[in-house]
Image 1 (cartoon, rainbow, N blue to C red):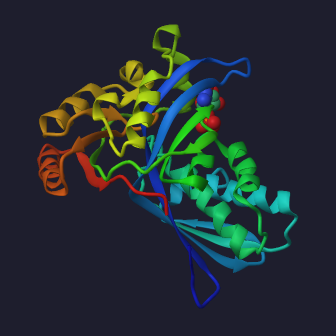
Image 2: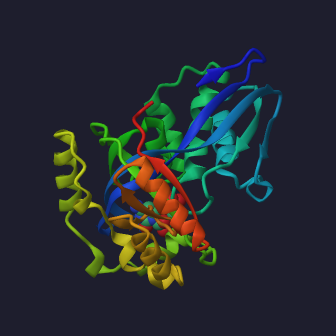
Length: 290
Ligand code: C5P
């Protein structure tokens, strides 16, 4: 978090991947019980907060700038819950693909909560902010913690994990039609046969404790249903593999795909091949807790 001479605060709002995403079953409240390893990546949006009498939002992607924007909703919730009289002008510079499974909107919301906590001098601790974050969405609390973390419950019960070794990944944004209510739709296709016991997650955590990231343990329960929701994703998956990334997995609820590459140099080669084939993609890496 950086404070400028004009009193504004700038924050980096990073994207995330789920190294594992296991669905254990359906809960009485309708949500699904998860075991997931969240991993922040270097790709980020920028959130800038300026002192202002009221709350307003400017977004570099105008279609994402309305009242439903999660950063603005986060600000309104915090303003109400804290009873603060001040406002803020929120300026979002979007670099994370929206609705791609990288949780850019959730990250913007968490950065806004952290930034406004400072801008408004609230002095709230992370636990109190996490209460607001969880009301905004299941992925938002993770970004208050960052780095590598184990998520359980609906994803909001978090435990910090040792940082994953730096790993380069190529992200591919498949040219598939946008799906309304994407996350809800994906969960609606999840049935008993997709449930797992959390073993891959546990084993991945054991590896992280030893400073290793075992790529063969990467897992995402949504992969079993993604082709029914994202038509044409199979071709993009093959293209990422053929370009030289392995293994290839769905990023969160997708449709973004990620593939592991051995180095930045190898990643650049993969990106060039994919771009030559007409795909939108970028190279990034895992990031440590700030
Ligand atoms: O919490 P979030 O707004 O991200 O969730 C969107 C939808 O995804 C929820 O309304 C719910 O239908 C589904 N969901 C679920 N189990 C979870 C998280 C989300 O069933 N652990």
